[in-house]
Length: 280
Image (cartoon, rainbow, N blue to C red):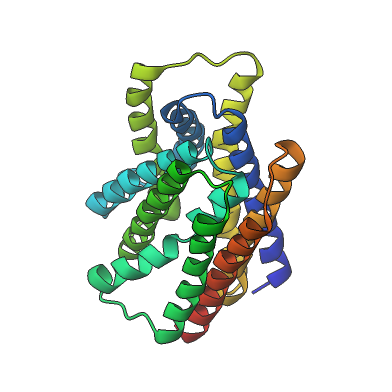
């Protein structure tokens, strides 16, 4: 296992996701379903090419679970893209990361997993951060908060579904199902509220799929290069990158309360990731 290589891969991954977040924020005037369509279509071309080149069966093995994962994923993605119209990028990304809390609840009932006492303490710290954002950050839009919490809820379902799929399907097959379902769903729903992109917006929409693909690809490479204990906390570098981009490119404002809430959310989740990795 090579930690330096894993760190490098995760930096590329989180930068890719950060640029994707920034592009969505910049294109927030376009309907969310349209953004979902272009983001998914760009990645779908790459995943289909990969599966075809390597002669990996596209339909996979756990087909029902793959469809469920795709439906939950496209719902989460759409709600997340919608929330970026109302929230700063750093806040939206941080709140989306509470998905493991929902995943823990789902895992208890669907996977019969046990969540240890210390994990609940760490989840409590993260949830306390959410409460601080909700109660003390006067800049937080209530509707945006509802959207991003719902996005995290469905993202939690995604985590559990992927756990049930396990290693019975190739990771790119799982991503391909997600992108295929998202492309179809976004495409159909865009018909009823289509806004034609202008000029450079076409190029930015193409970039959504490319950034998303490389974000997922290098995240997978990072987990393959280092231990879970080393790599899992590195995911949250995305929050630092996203807050920085929000400040520099979009002139977003973060109050002391919002910073405290974000730190508590990410801190609690990092502690949980470290603890879970060492006790699993």
